[in-house]
Length: 336
Ligand SMILES: NC(=O)c1ccc[n+]([C@@H]2O[C@H](COP(=O)([O-])OP(=O)(O)OC[C@H]3O[C@@H](n4cnc5c(N)ncnc54)[C@H](O)[C@@H]3O)[C@@H](O)[C@H]2O)c1
Image (cartoon, rainbow, N blue to C red):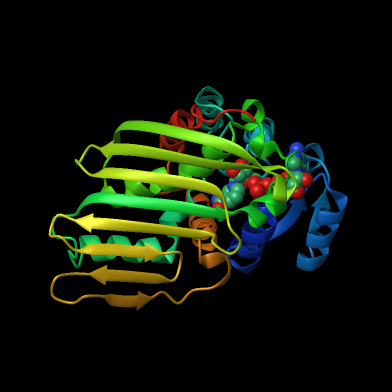
């Protein structure tokens, strides 16, 4: 069986915890190398997976065994790193947002088109089993009648988790360098709404506030709200709140059907359906590891498409649309 030679670039939160273990398990992929400027991390993962390690992109580019790169470096470095791999004719699965701005993201997309390599944005929510099941229940079981009239989505990240992942000096807080946290975090849900509704974003309005969290080493808290209308008429409110009390990290999506039913996806493992007839039906989603948020499935799809010369289901344009919407929300973020 032909295996695609893959290098995971950036071994932090998502590269190290989700992408590298996924590539390692996918049959038609071979984790040829890992790359991170942090030698400790690069050594740890190259030992764990028995693959080569590179401390710089320049060295990784010279490796002919690397046919594709999964790029999970901080957003401010996406442009340089992605452009280098694309110019070297390597296929790229690029973390989101694609670049730090829409203009920069468009350049990455144009370069991939010119080089005739596959560029797939990492919009993993579409592959998460819980959202796949929500989509199936709406489209096949018609649990919301003609569909959702409204969606309320909220993403709560607890302050202790935020401080551990993004200390005050992190790239994520610097609006000039990275677009700020609301840009970084809103792109996946916006893409999720487009995919669930088979519709495009018609209008979006956002407000946000920021504050410091002295109890958590001065890391930043934020509360961002976006109200959206989609071309099919569904209205969506998205609430992105970073800095809630301990253990209250929660992603929840409530979909209100035009038939009065309410479908709720609670985090990653529980779906509830409320109706006039049955107060509540609860469905559990059995999944674990990097499949929970769809990372494994998206890498599997990327690898399969590259090997078969097919266009992935998630296109560079999907990445640009989510990036543009994320930019509108992020405009409201005030630099602390
Ligand atoms: N899809 C998802 O679920 C998801 C979740 C979180 C973050 N993200 C995105 O993934 C990207 C990375 O976020 P993170 O939270 O994992 O970041 P992180 O800060 O935890 O890790 C980034 C890693 O990249 C390394 N690095 C930085 N510059 C490099 C370079 N030039 N060459 C090689 N290595 C380099 C760092 O040493 C670090 O280990 C961001 O774009 C973010 O928006 C995606």
